[in-house]
Length: 572
Image 1 (tube, rainbow, N blue to C red):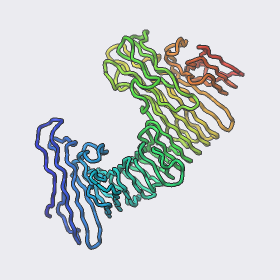
Image 2 (cartoon, one colour):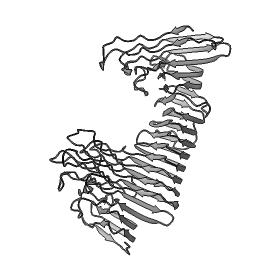
Image 3 (cartoon, rainbow, N blue to C red):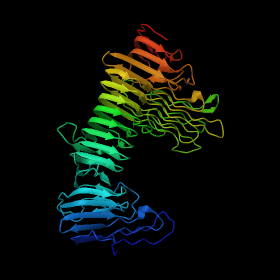
Image 4 (cartoon, one colour):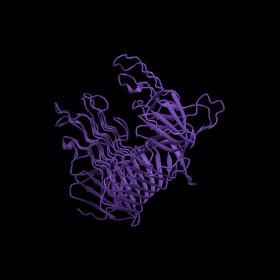
């Protein structure tokens, strides 16, 4: 029942101030024994705790090494008593503060078990004073803990052994750009996270459940086979990835790509990021699962179709992309700024949505961002859940929403009853007067498929809402191409909301969807629904090969030198 401690000292108490001294780091303890099972005392090497709970100033945990000399079982324990650092991802290799380092000059560490608990952060890093620059490796058979700690591989070579459903890792793993990490072929994650960067070796199957999180960074790649994409930073190749029960797959940076044979998202699992590509033979989004890039495009006042501040009032307009953003108003009848404009490709949308405008009453940071970019390339795509790339809603009154982003899908078979959407974000009114924030424009969606006979879901891109209907953002564009029938269809639907201007006077008028990037367009069918208005932003030739359809509420505007050709027949 005794005590063995090598704790760091606590700093002096300067009161509740932001800056001040930090706690001392824990020391190092090594116990060589034949049997420690009967020990009921405390062995601790906690970092010194800052007395006013400024966790950024807590000292890092020390190390406790337990070596059974009879069985040669080597066990490393890193425990900070629940007083972890402010960060769970270290910004500096050697001077980050609050973490624990393995730093001596040995060329390798081999442990049968590493236990990390009490919010401890263990950093494995080749020290700067390593004169011979030899590679340092860490091998561990078991990772145990209390789900609060993490191990960080900065620039060494780390070998991790099995992670099964019955023996799942109990610590988070963070790998960095200069590291190499060998994983077992199949890992099971339960209520833990793995951040992938650097070179990832050996991993082919990932199973996530119970709130587990995988994060894929732009500074990492895999090396599992002879595929030509292996070794390209930001590209990760696996055989299978399955996530359920709140499992989260995050593609952290624009340009990250997953290549797999099969991805299955179930229950409330999610796959998300700002701008990413997924290439998988089979992709299933089941139950309430979600693939999204909501509110992850251009930020406030940013992007080609950014919402614009008013010339003479306090508020601005919604962001534009497939549709123009909504206009702001000073009073019920007086508009006060040009809408965020449309841009990008109807056929191959790969651009983020634009941010809405802020409000001078609220200051910066109150508008919605645009939606990001999602590109899915599959053989069989099954969606019962949702694929979403919506613009962000305004966060405070008087501010405007961001525009929807891009969804590009190429698949052989499209199945399911789910939804594919890229809506604009909503604006919010000022509560004390008649100033109104505006909705963002809808985004752009393109779906290429060869068989959709078992698809009964929805594909939609509406403008974002506002307090007054005429301040809504314009609809986005939905392009559907049946590759087997060679049939090209454009759908524009604004969910029954009329734009502010029934007649398009300038390229900045709010409330419509626009064709923007080509001198000519061909569609077998254009369908205008829900009070949608479709126009071109520059002189354009639009050829409608077969049908102009709708619900008697839509408008096709022919202006700016635009020509409509080959309109063979029409139906309501």
